[in-house]
Length: 341
Length: 199
Figure (cartoon, each protein chain N blue to C red):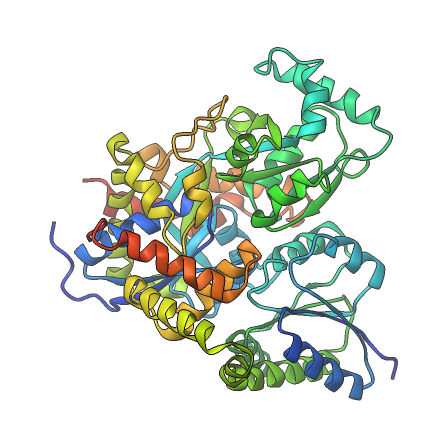
């Protein structure tokens, strides 16, 4: 493999949020995959998804780790500026879960023995919150996310009204655990490492995982604006190839310990990385980083996400052609051209 | 003209005060709120801000985004129209200055623009004097630690001085620690790492 010789741009800045699935970007930088493809990349730690969207839209960032629904929402101009975006690479699959605080989890544990039986878990949870005398407060991070859709889907499946039976609030991931431990919230739906950390910290237990709710699900993607992709096709290709190789590195079990060391470097996951070293949650969140079924930003998957936006009332235009929007944003074609050997 | 309710969410005390005074002068009702507190949801619901001015890098932005999708009554992210060059310039200036804004439905564009322009001017002015303020406030020993940590981050991350500073600031926010303490631990981690990890 040779690096393309005429990259339009070699110095890039990419945004990330300190979650476990920023790992492909961290590895691509720290293990020299960006360099191999002639790229010099600064990784910029961002404090919110909103900031990632704005900085990518206005070209302050060349691209970023994004929640899979984000480039679709930006392209449609939902809740913000309309900026067409694309992704040619998914960074990760799964890795979300709903965690309950200690009190609620212990109470539920008295009625649930088989946590694999979702019907029982759901009906017991419903009975429990009805008997609480107040609405349980459940937190998510960002409205255009699997977390948000999975939580709403699961509640609806068990006839629990998100509007009447629970109080949904939004708080930043770094504050989730603190709020759960203090009893300010009763649970959260968020990505790793925040579910594992609650278990390690004995602040709560898993209600269910995103994998149990939906099965395999695209989680984070590499997002860039459509304009950036048009102007920098060779750089885009080099970027996607480099991160794809980093994903392959991540999939090798002998690299597990080194990954934790890389993630614990400032400014990545900082101290929380070391805490999860060697920890295996009781129910696997099935978080994966490599494989065609993982890294392909599939048009079907994009369409599924758009349907969730409709189901949650975020996308009210019924006339919209979901498949063609998905095709425009989730660039299966580029992935197939660049990432299949 | 009826005054607007303005909510400012920002950590930087000097910047908040200056902006608050300026908006008062324009006749608005201003309430300030520290970034990253747990009761923001309730605060927004009870204060009913017409416009929220927030540090672009505040983790609380996603909370506001979420509230906007949950109720029509909550302020929404400010939107520009690409065909209006004025709007686009204002947005670009805002992002470069580190200002973001959420506005309630039905506000007149020129009233919003006046507030945005004021906020942008104050954020810009603040970033110019930030180094001086810091020097006046920080002990020499702490300043040296911060400088050293910045230098090590610049080398390790291949980034510029401002990015290194922003990195330290964000870690400090996440950990709820002071900048010199974060700087000391960053130096420790990067020293321990040197030699262990090779590209």
